[in-house]
Every structure is written in C-alpha cells, then in structure tokens.
Length: 412
Image 1 (cartoon, helix red, strand yellow):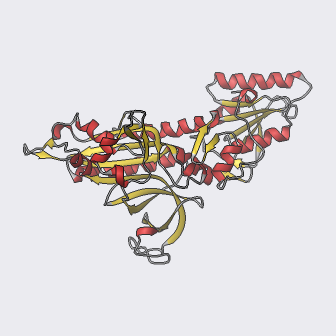
Image 2 (cartoon, helix red, strand yellow; image 1 turned 180 degrees about the vertical axis):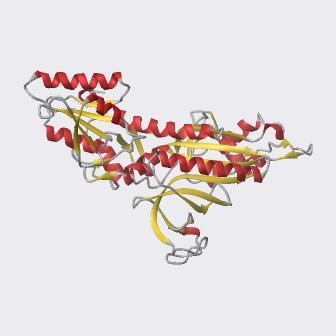
Image 3 (cartoon, one colour; image 1 turned 90 degrees about the vertical axis):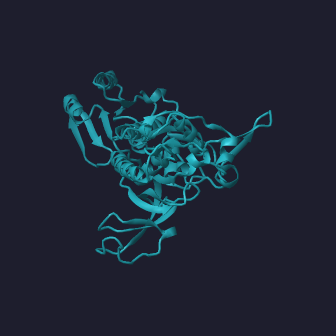
C-alpha cells in the first residue's frame, strides 16, 4: 500500500473527548474514527489489525474443534421472553418495526444458539458440540467510554459448547483455557485467569482473562508466585494477605481490563427452551452449556494500552497492519525515488506486506513521526545517505542498521 493513496492518514491532535491512550492513538494514527460515543468505523489500517486478531482467535478455536457459524444480529422478542432476558437484561437494545413487532439486537447469543444446536442433538451420541461465531454485538451501555474498550457496538468471538455431563464441560473448559492463553501469547499479551461472579449470564463462578492496564475497569488481586487471581468485587481477601493458593507471596492489587471470559451456564438454556436429548439410560436429559467470549475489538484497544510509547503505537508483529513501513527520503535526484520504488516492488514480490510512504510534499521528520505513531514493527529508509543499502530499524528499538535487501528479507 502506498501512503499517498491511503485515505485514512494521521492527524496532529487527538479528539478532545479522548480519555484513554487507545482512543487517542488509534484515532491520531488513522486506525479508527468515532461516529458517536461507543461506535467506531474501522479504517483500512484498523481493519487489517482487527482481521489479524480475528484470524488468530479463529485458528485456536478451530484447533480445539470449534466449528464456525454465523448467527443473526436481529432477534425476535419471543426467544428473549422464553429465557426471561427481555425484562431482566438492562443492556439489551430493543427496537420496534413498522408492524409494531419488537426485536432485540444481539448482545449475546444463548437465545439463538440453543434452539439452533439442539435441532441437531437427538441423543448423547451427538454430544459434545462446540460452535462459535465472530460477529458484531450491541449493548446499551449508559456510559460508553475508554475508546474501543467499552463500546455500544463491538466485534466479538463467542463460542457455545453443549455437553452430556458437567464433567465433560469441566474437561472442555480446561481446553478452552489453554487455547485462550495461547491466543493472548500470540497477541503479545499476558493474561491472568481471574475468578469472578457470573453476573446475568450465570449464578456460578465464571472466569475472566484479565490484562493488567491502568485503562482497565476492574481491580484484581493476584499472586506473583502462582497463578492465583481473583476479582476484588467477590474477594474475601485483601491486598497484602498471603496467597490462599500457594502461601509463597502476598497478594498484589492492580487495575486490569477483561480480554475474555468463560461462563458455566449449567442447564438453564436447554431447560428454558425445553430441548432435551436422549441419554445413555434412554431417558430425556438436558445438556450442560458453556459460553466463551473474546472481545476482538476490545483486545485491539488493550494491545495499544499495553504497547505504546510517547511517540505512538508499538504493534506486536502478529497483529501489525503491515510487516514493514518503507520511507523514501525525497531528493532532487530521481534515482532515490526509483530505488525506493524498486525496494517496494521487490518486497511485494517476496510476499512482504509493506506500507510505502511515497509522499513528495512531506518532510522526512513528518514521515518518521507518522511511522512512529502508526507503529509498524520495522521501519525501512531509502535515502542518499544510505547509499546502496537500506536503513533498518525496529519500532521498539533505538538502534538503526544499514543492510542489503537480502539481509532485510531474512530479518522479515
């Protein structure tokens, strides 16, 4: 992609209402544009990042035999009445058609997925099942804030599993937990598995995957010596207490942002819809369900909160919009532009995705500033100074090197 043709370019100052790093930097760098509070357009650079996060999540869900589907966003009122969610879930968007029929916009999909899956589950031979989708969700938040961390419209992976027994659900949860930790590692994040209340989804304890960040909305207590972690809201312990799991360290308190969750839904939804299966004993039983969510757009914001400096974003290689940011330092000698074009074409021919800043009317200083703000992992500079070599610099390092094209290809 040539920067001169990219319609979403950088802006000098962040929006006045931006109160978090992710809102400021993603807007300034041209990744997102706010339409209204809690609702954003994802511009070309931002959509590329969103797609990369989505693909990592998809690969790990497929690896544990999750099957991808796509469910409607528009739901009839009746299914939400069946589960009593219509009158009890305060964030549910409700709309009325011209025929005066009422609908809900999906904020979760238990009401849709349960009848859908149970149409195909007749006996215990058909279990377990795990289906997931990556789709837009809507929640009527009273105060949408923190940039794309807390929106009224957001992009999410939600998976639902159905099991013959509680024991089989517990087995599958451990698989999902490992898959989630793998996902966060691939995204360049470290997540803490945190006990939390099930809220409106479940009366049981749920688990949240929390990333430490000052932009978070939760306080957690955690132990450095083991993996113990709990949300402060349900904790019977406090900061400074000995870890109840290992007793090797005292508990630390930190602000954190939820990057994923798992809920043990029990048999609520199959019972609500009265959709049993035939068990091993020949009698009717209700499946045990689990719900597993990862906010794709939320994770994008969390990455920015965790990985930035005073100059801009520092994207992990796994989700960066491009592998390299090629900069041409303009000169009256045409051979410089010719060389930059040649490097650009050779990178593309080698399968390297590159953003090429080919602008003639912008200073070198502005190009460098924009490169730092956008945060692509590697910066390449072609100039008279570099001669027949190319300046190579990693976004998270200060040092620069002069390398041949073949050397750069090996690095990339």
